[in-house]
Length: 534
Ligand code: NAP
Image (cartoon, rainbow, N blue to C red; front, side, top):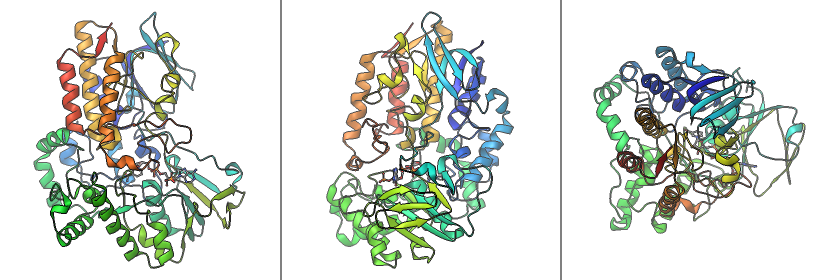
């Protein structure tokens, strides 16, 4: 049986940064990855239209200053192929692949109390031992396949967007339906509408989508960022979300201090700036329901202004009381415009629910959509799904699945009481994917590696968190959650409520990246308060 100091699960951006840092620490380690190459999300999500919702100049690794100076991002929001190229460039430059075991799924992770080691088994029959296990398995990597009657009978092409084939998928001349209208469904539909013979968008819940505006980056844009990357990185690390604002918002703390005309001018400026600017237009834009509703109606009017058929336009408008930002912001490159194309149909599957999927298409109560291809954009079992999929068993034979039956509990999103020496990058109740995940990863990797280094220097073989510290962190994380108006939308992967049967529990920390970083640093400086070394 092979033994390592550290086993890292996943070779996306988290696993890659962990790999680089572990080499620097001089410990023995192995990275296990289920894909055939690196990239995580960007490896699997090859669906048409896939694009990052964080600007390229903010969404690049902070651990390679040379590549920062050399890499030419082509547009403001990079599309998936460009990000995957960038990942492959990093892999070659740092010779990352030699430390990664590809095409391997971790099937169980079991704590051996007698040896003080984790035993990691894989679907290829390997058994490894390691002092530490670090999950870099990601937060949005466990696809949610909808349990729709007959879905297995469909004889056409069926793809989940998160498991898109590596070989080209031909759309021309085909009748395609996209199921789901979250970030993925909106992006996929916008792209598929351009190529397919006919596209049916199967919408259960209307959501707001904001324009992203993604012009090409000029030499001047790149040069300006290259000149201040070190300062910019430092700012990102300590900011709320790690993303440079498009406009200097909020324009004022209280919206209604401004007259109506000024407010609407500001909403328009944010709309033109694109992405999430509108959510932060005023200090109370997401806490004062009256302001939030005014902004929501502003966006609904934008939808009505684009979509020519009034019935379709109304179907695309979330109902009053649904706020912009109540779920993760969706950004697009012309989504509402596709509904003016003759080859696109919006099917409201709430008013006319799906009854079954047959061999040839989707049967709703009142209609039948004959299809050559069904694209499933139904999201993920977020944050906890990838961890639970590993079948983790901690001290005293406690299975993580049972320990988290009522919802996940962690200390700082980094460790779980009773699961010693197991670290979770972007784990539940950490800022994770709520913020620019590149910097959530950066902070976690740094904290974990400093902790491992500390243990090596002090000779401590084992670290666990106390139940009390975990309870305190959960209470604090819940408080930050309660303050956010976005919780008004109950069906939200941030809460786990997008998955039938999954316990409702806040999955991301809402207190901001910089604030969170300070807490983690302060705990480490205070002798890892709330953690016990064995
Ligand atoms: P999502 O936001 O969870 O959306 C899933 C969609 O599928 C929803 O419209 C949902 O409808 C629908 N759905 C789920 N189960 C269904 C069922 N059984 N029948 C019919 N409809 C069903 O998932 P996502 O769009 O993949 O996005 C997840 C996250 O990934 C995003 O929030 C974002 O963080 C990330 N992402 C980012 C980007 C980007 O960077 N631009 C792109 C893609 C994804 P209901 O609303 O009715 O549940």
